[in-house]
Image (tube, rainbow over all chains, first blue to last red; front, side, top):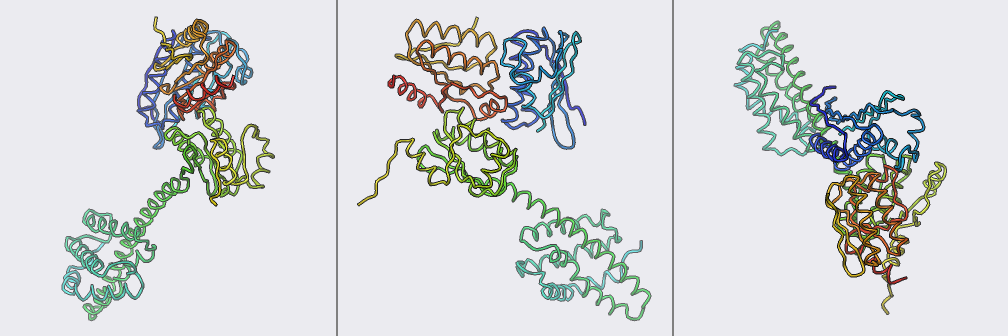
Length: 134
Length: 283
Length: 120
């Protein structure tokens, strides 16, 4: 697996969530992603970027365009130094929310991508990595 | 590896038209000329003979990967692609090469009758060369054939699932054959797009021609129905066979709110009623 | 601070969302719309989201809230122009917008609103 290009994007204020969506849309287009897959990815980005900003107290979105045996993928990592998630199982339950949301952020985002990885511990921040292949 | 001797090559060159004649006769006898026009066959055989003689004159050996065989390889690749598209099978295509063996060997035999050792050597060389060329042809044929199959699969995917307009505001998607998850997804996307493009209020998905559904496909169907409703149109599923109904119930899938009809006619009748269209029989 | 314009057409209010919305903008629209329904005694609200290339759970919740709010204030809400890719994504996300009326385009949405209001 090769990393064709990579970069990073701050996710601190509300406008950054919009920027993260726009950047990932542009990247997905560069990967030649179909409209439907692109829409799913951008929606997942919106959910995760909002989590980073609201619950993580701000952080960053790292992106990588990957080449793997003729397929192209976009991998995005949302990381923050926030309080972390104490109960991962609970956080990955549809409808459960610690804030005022619908509780579909994490679980919904997971359903919208091909690969989903959650790395978190209380007090150690949160890292969510998602990948969507073309 | 020793090549075919220049002596032999010049003999082949001199006897070209005779060789071509015998070669074509052998091809016809083996049925390898099916669908191939006479002129084309003549041109092909002549060109091929000229290509190999000129390669051999340049000192090419029996290793056909060598640069001297470049033109010949390209010729054979073109030939097998054409043959694959014509619908010839692999043995018919390979026969193009192998049918030349007989006349070619006969010629060598005649020319080297007095030198049995040389004859044996030349025959071995020629045999190796023809085998290698024949194999190359089959390999290319196979690759072209696979490309044809891939293209047909894609075309089939589009053809097998046309979105048809039944009435102003009513679209139907008659699904036929086994549904896999990817095909279902592609088809559903095109249905949704057509609904937007035509502003149709009712879509009928007819699954009469679908033998079985698995969990994933059933879920795709349900998601499609929900997506259509979200867009502000209605969806009717028709032609649910008993086995499929059983599968859906066994899988515990929730069909609540999904309108199903036994057949396409009933679904169309319902769509008409919803649109407020009534029919009367002319007296 | 930017706002999404709300147009009045007789007894209906018309909203066309044409920008990539951030969350505050969505909240502002929600507030503005309930103010306008009350001020104009509008009977219906039409929200055109055909230009939205993405609807996440936040915007989805805004749509549901506006729909619920207006119903309490005696106005019908119809959402029109949801794109196919967006609709599929919403279903995958688990958002089915219960209680929200939808129509394919503005024309059909207006027809639906008029029918609903006339039926009352």
